[in-house]
Image 1 (cartoon, helix red, strand yellow):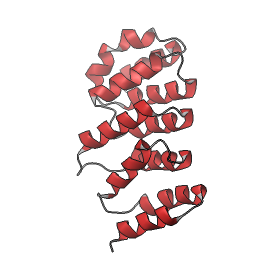
Image 2: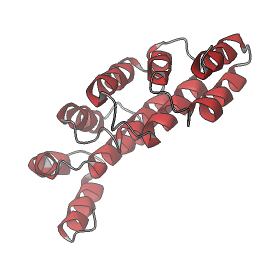
Image 3: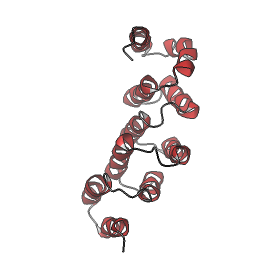
Amino acid sequence: MTELNQLIDNYQSEVDEDEKAEIIITDFQFLNDHTKWNFLLDLIEQSETYDLVKVNVYKIIEIADFSDLNRIAIKNRILEALKNETDEMIRQYGFMSLSWSFSSFPDVIDFSINAMENINEDIDVRHAAFGVLTKSKDFIKIETLRERLLLIKDFEKYVKTFFEQRAKGNR
């Protein structure tokens, strides 16, 4: 049995949901087995997965190195999970997970700006979506969105400050 299979068995045999969340963050975070992503992404896609388990998966995604993996397939699964997620805290962590490895993908940028524009979206989720845009290395796409971003209710001053800092080379 591989280490990954053993960890999955430990997770699945645990009955306490908080302990399951702890297993995810402590045992899977630095596991050097790229096949772990199928299991972890399945967890965020399943509506019945405990919220802290999902949050911990998103925390792992945020700092993971995906350079040797199919980032497009992983990104697509994250976006699909976020589109179906209704829990505000999970959505917030989901957006944060996109910040480093996925923030330059055009569909991630579009998804983030749409969330920012949605006044029915929780304000913390909207700020997390803005965080994705501020981390994007697709400066040309972000620049083309300047006017649209400046029109978003509750974000005018943040957007203005972001573009001012970027013009000074601070972003």
